[in-house]
Image (cartoon, rainbow, N blue to C red; front, side):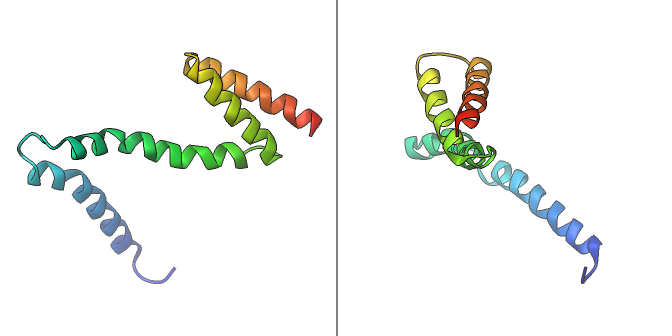
Length: 101
């Protein structure tokens, strides 16, 4: 490793700290803009989706099994099933699909 590791650790800590503190110091009034409020509301969901969807397809031995489980998971969650039943159903679908693929 080239350079001083302490500089890297300090830089990472500073960036992490600034990301958390700057919004608190710069935005003191309530946000009234509907666009910004809706944007901030959906950011965690989009971030989770961006990290999760590729992993669903790539975590299986066959990408087709992952895609089938993703589609089935979306359908059963649309009909009101919770996170745990959807996860169990998707795991079962992947297990069955990989037996036949």
